[in-house]
Image 1 (cartoon, helix red, strand yellow):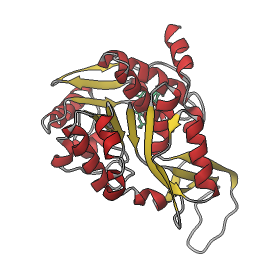
Image 2 (cartoon, helix red, strand yellow; image 1 turned 30 degrees about the vertical axis):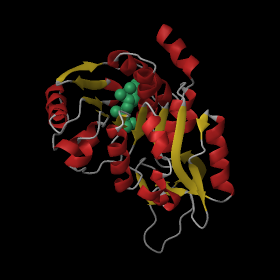
Image 3 (spheres, protein in one colour; image 1 turned 90 degrees about the vertical axis):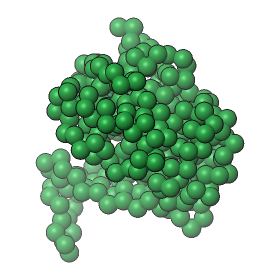
Image 4 (cartoon, protein in one colour; image 1 turned 180 degrees about the vertical axis):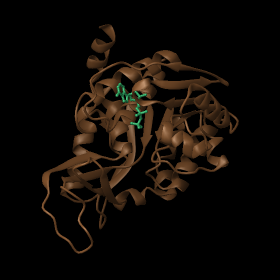
Amino acid sequence: KLIVLGSVNVDHILNVPKFPKPGETLSGSNYKISFGGKGANQAVAAGRLGANIQFIAAVGNDELGNKIKQLLNNDNINTCSVACIDGQNTGVALILVNAQGENQIAIHAGANAQVTTEYLLKYKEDIISADAILMQLETPLPTIEQAAKLAKQHQTQVILNPAPAQTLSDDLLKHIDIITPNETEAEYLTGIKILTEQDAEQAAMILHNKGIETVIITLGSKGAWVSSAQRGTIIAGFKVKAIDTIGAGDTFNGMLVTALLEGKTLEQAVIYAHAAGALSVTKPGAQTAVPFRNEVEEFLEQ
Ligand code: ADP
């Protein structure tokens, strides 16, 4: 069994010709609401890709929060540990996109901030008995640290997608079995700007030296640097026509962990994850773009 511990967000996206100045009101177009949050995205990916998954998260106890919980349920996710919290809104991101495609984003963690260490302990037994736990960094750090320690103590494999980028304590890193930064996050964690394979190798080494067995640095369309027991190599991705790369990393992580839990080797699991990630960039949105398992299998057979 897989546990995903993470965030749920609702993105409100509006295209504007330019960003408004303080006090200015502008008309936008193309208003979209999309369900996201790295936790929910990765849970949806794991659910659609065939994992037996339980999601630990929190949403607001209102129409929207309850609807999101139902949608997650429809994606084969056990949501008994998704709390609907009174007096809290579901996490939100207000996103303006200008004509140049740049964005301005304001977020409110809302119910995500209620995923506290105390809340986590309600699901202690689930974490202890799980095969793996997958986390990101949109949940309060003390909760992530506690979950990592608890899991590691009980041989539950700990996978951290360290996104969005932030600095992490050595004490957290030493409890991680597999870490999956993208290039920006790898630079944040190691101080090394990833331009070449040598840079990726050096960054991976720094993370190995913090006690992490497996380091996978995702490199967008180039694939990933995959390093285990201090030895690394590039595993190339698949060539597709990318139309929207939002959520590629989330799909990658969901598929990676699902494949590993099925007993695939690290290399095979990364190839599956590349296939799922590549399929996700051929469609718009985050959760809407996550493929189903049969689509990944068909893609790999081509
Ligand atoms: P993030 O979305 O977290 O920034 P990356 O951009 O590194 O992460 O992408 C994660 C994975 O998604 C890649 O390792 C690859 O498997 C897949 N991917 C991302 N962009 C593309 C692309 N343009 N073409 C094919 N695969 C892609």
